[in-house]
Length: 283
Image 1 (tube, helix red, strand yellow):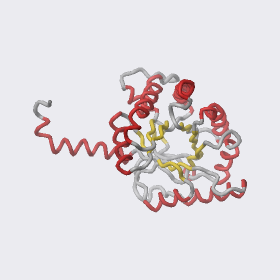
Image 2: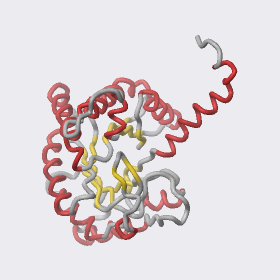
Image 3: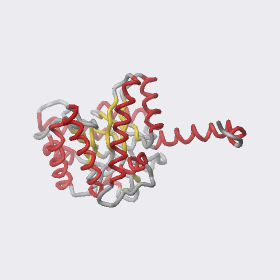
Image 4: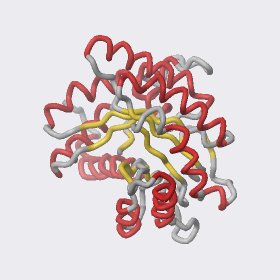
């Protein structure tokens, strides 16, 4: 799953998916959505009209161009903290309108990140939204435990290390709360994840914890691997860590920093190669 902020970054992800012949997820953060619509637009606190507009426009754009690339494409909205719920509500309203007209939602899935709230409140709010999403077959992604680093104005860079790791009991409480409503939910459980690329040894990624969470839940419900996980902070991860996470039931892995740098480096290298030409008239 790749964060996008412009039509050109969407196109880059679509092109890569086509070249590799693989399904991809394009996702929009709240800040990225506002950027997609235009930084000059008002985006009032508690309203977030530009973020709603940008996310909806981005979803429509991807829906229009994705069929030309010939691969399955999922459209997703990324981290939504409690203070950003007006953005979430606006996207759901667009989903409901699209569903009424076309029999399917505009987006494929949405994420609620209420990991800053007490676990009980986190799960209760997720239950309320999943109930609203179920009639449209929307998938809910939620976060239990904290992802380190900084994302969309939420700074967890100074969080205590033990907060970066969920427990089997934490994760199972999510399953217990959401599974009676719908099976269409994914859990971003914390196993040392950090947004961005960080120095080796600074944080210990422990994807093997996901297998422990699965086994704990399986023992409770009597089914093998009942949980669908999300791997946050995927940029800079080692292949063996990714393989361990996939084997434990990860269905989605987020990448943002790596693609930001690839995009910037491409522009930089083009400028360096064409700097003489770019000093003159273009066209």
